[in-house]
Length: 220
Image (cartoon, rainbow, N blue to C red; front, side):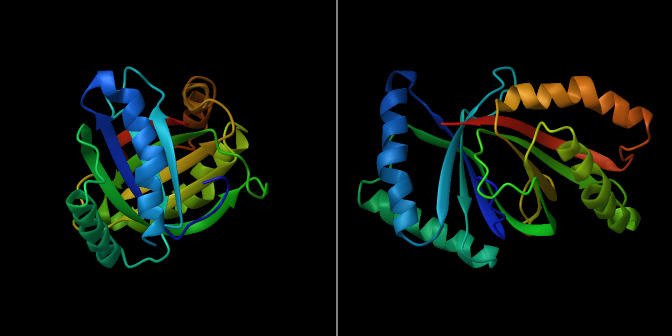
């Protein structure tokens, strides 16, 4: 997102089902599919990433779309309609697999280093739930006022975002995305190894967060 703060995003996770066609798949995505989606007006920006953690078992690729509005139900249906039309026109790739896709609306404050259009080389992505419905407000205040400033304070990440999921969507209710100008795996592992134990010892972590999924992706 290069330091921008979109009000809504769509995440599309993909694989190429035939390794022999991987290069062709990526050429199709970059040269045909992204221009098709952006040309439809459904997204203002589309950026692609590759899984940086080979042991994660996560999908190989991520396309992050910044959306022009916050009516997620309408935009989600419009995406489905557009993809159907692209199929009919022969514009979709035969070896494309989409293991998961999700829609998110921004919540919380804008968090960043103050660098305008800071270059993003990688993303650390966390999906989560609050384990206590009675403490939901406390959970969100902790995330915005304590946890994200703590992570940005490590200097491993330059911008952070929080989102809430489309109603009825599978997966976590909340999404946090941390942008780094370096390698995403090194940043995530650096946080886990060097900073998380200190935050835990200082009582800066929450006892009501349930992390349902995490991903580490580098820009391609």
